[in-house]
Image (cartoon, rainbow, N blue to C red):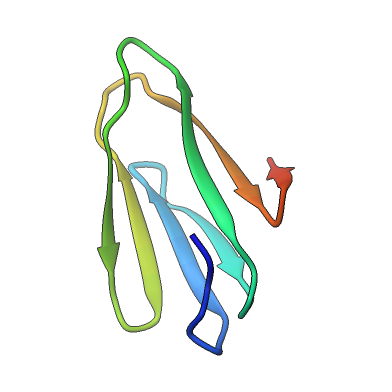
Length: 71
């Protein structure tokens, strides 16, 4: 996903409430990489933030921003 909004956006990954800042023009990926079953990731787009809901219990994910894995 690329931030084309012209302003910084807040990204939240639930159910962990992890927050990341995505500058204008940057891109990111939330990738399911393991767990008990393939994860379903749903998005909610709000005015100033985007919430990624990782729905599968035991899911493992990675967050990549501009091609770099962010811990």
